[in-house]
Length: 269
Image 1 (cartoon, rainbow, N blue to C red):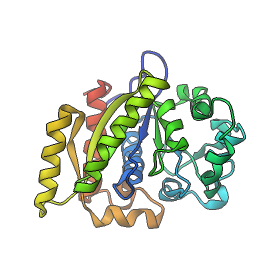
Image 2 (image 1 turned 45 degrees about the vertical axis):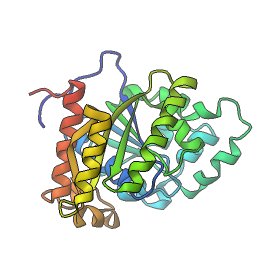
Image 3 (image 1 turned 60 degrees about the vertical axis):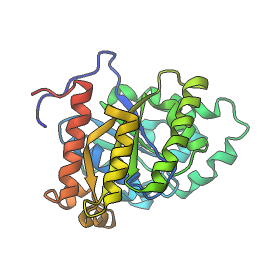
């Protein structure tokens, strides 16, 4: 996974929304650890925590007293991304943290013009400073997620290898199509990453087969296994790659980062 990072031809970082309206599918875990693995290759990363629970902020060890300004201030009070970004313990990785105030943003923005473009407008001036911007979306398809999808170049979908999350995938895909038709015509599917894969459970294999049958090469080859060490890491305020670099989950996210870079042709041998 080594090599020299390349800048994008347009000089902008790629903005990826990590989204799934179903909770508990490894969305925030994927945002945290994929960002960490990409930063380890020398890329500049910005993580935007758009979930009022603030789990991505906690997972990077950002103290609650250090979360002002936050994504709430960016969306509602026009704070800049530069003002809100906090340096993490990972070199080259910044985060715009979230607070519970964000839960009221949808109501406060209800009658504001271009309310679906607030994040896009705010990120625009900062994109050139980073190679990748990952937006950790809330587990819902409301105004916050709409802002993420309008701001993004592409959507990365973590999908738990169980039946109910698979059912919800078609709903998310329809939402992406509506956003593409009405707000962001260049929005693409970055890929679907299968998470919480349990080799002892035949359902995991069946879900993986079904998703690959429908979406083909949009599904990453890398599969993220169920892993206790990955689950423990947020309680220590660390990405799994810092908490236990050698665990199976960490190795899987390193592999996923390599696959993301190879697919975009930015990984130099």
